[in-house]
Length: 250
Image (cartoon, rainbow, N blue to C red; front, top):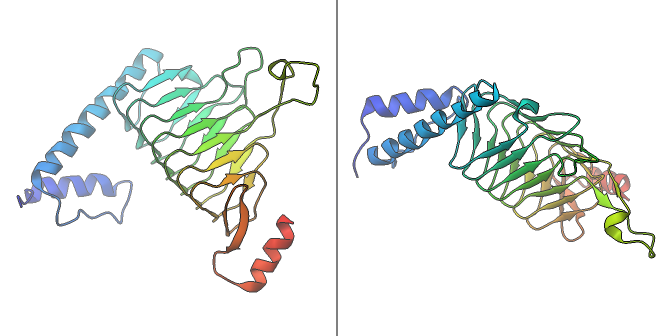
C-alpha cells in the first residue's frame, strides 16, 4: 500500500475538519486515492464559478458534472455545499430554494419547488449538515423543510402536493391540487426509498425504515416503517414513552 505524503494527508484533514472537526483520514487511504480526491474536488470547486454568469457568488460550493439550475437568483447556498453529478435545482417559487451549510446532495437528484407557471409553489429549505443520497426527488409546491443534521439514504421522494379527484365527471388533471407542506425535523435518519406525502410532519430525532411510505405525522423520537408507515417503537425503547407516542398518532 502506498502511504500518502504526510503533508498531503495533513492538508486534506485540515480542510475537511473546517466543516467536520471530528474527521480523521482512515489509515488505509492511499496517496493515489488522495490525489484523485483532490483532483475531483478541485474541478468541482471550479465548476461552481459558472454561477457568476447568474450574478451569484459561490461560497465554498462544489458542483459535480452537468449540474443544472433554473432561476438561480431565487436560490441560497451556505458554505461547503456539495451537489453531485447531474443534479437539477429549480427555484420557481414564491419562496426560496435554500441549502444550509455543509449540505450534500447525491448525484442525479432533483430539487424542484414547482413546475407549474400558472400556480407556482412555495419553497424548499434544507438545514445545516444534511446529507442526502443519490436519486432524491424533492418537491416544494406546498413547502418542504428538512431540519439540521438529518441523514437520508438514496431515492428519497417528497411530494407536498396532492391532485384533487372527487369529481368523477371531470378529468383529474383539470381538478387542481391541494397543498399542505412537509416538514422533516432535525437529527432524523431517513432510510433509502422512503416516500413522504403531503401534510406530513416527522418530528425531531425520528428514524424512518427503508421503503416506508409516510402518509401521516409522527412525533419526535419515533421509529417508523411500513406501507403505510406505522409507529414501531420509541427510540430509547421506553414503554411509557411508547404508549404516549401511540396516543399522539392514534
